[in-house]
Image 1 (cartoon, one colour):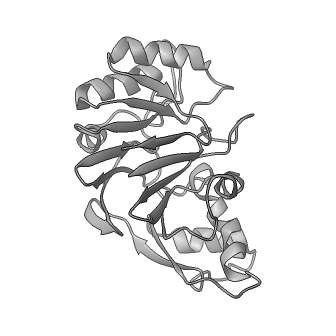
Image 2 (cartoon, helix red, strand yellow):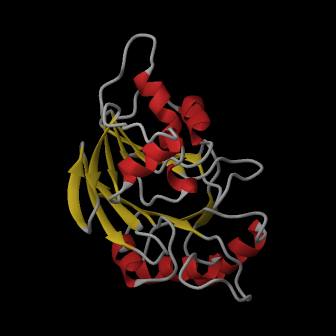
Length: 248
């Protein structure tokens, strides 16, 4: 199983990265997890933009799904002909959300995507075993656990601390975890993690490596996020970058 970071900026595109988008590959199958603002550009840079086999959208905030609207053009109007409808696993309402963002008339996109509503549980996507659960964010949002041949990748999506996050991350080889807020200040509740909270979750879940993502340079320095995370978690910590690849 391989993880490729396409975009990792938190809440809005940063000066060096598009918003959240992560490509997970196994046995030739490509699952795109989230498709945030600007990430279609990175998909073309690091992979074949026509080669995606399925999409999982953890929630319907723009920084995690907006380029699924732009991607309609890629699949519907390819000069060689329309591409097959792509499975999209997402919270209920994703079809209407994408259609409304793509066209002011709300033109349906069911020729491009086949939608499957997420709910807590475990199910296969291609050769991957996927588990999702609701996490602590203002809209319906799912953290993700992906298993393949005994290896585990966990992804927090956007969340404040919660028990579901710890269950999803338990014993994961790689824990891709958001860290949007700075420790030591009063942050909005039930929205995002700080670096320290990401580290605490990694420790409680006993993960192999913590990958910090969804940092917001305008809100907190990377150095302060890393310092707080490493104070709370004794294992290896890394801030992800666009184009970074991790083999499990």
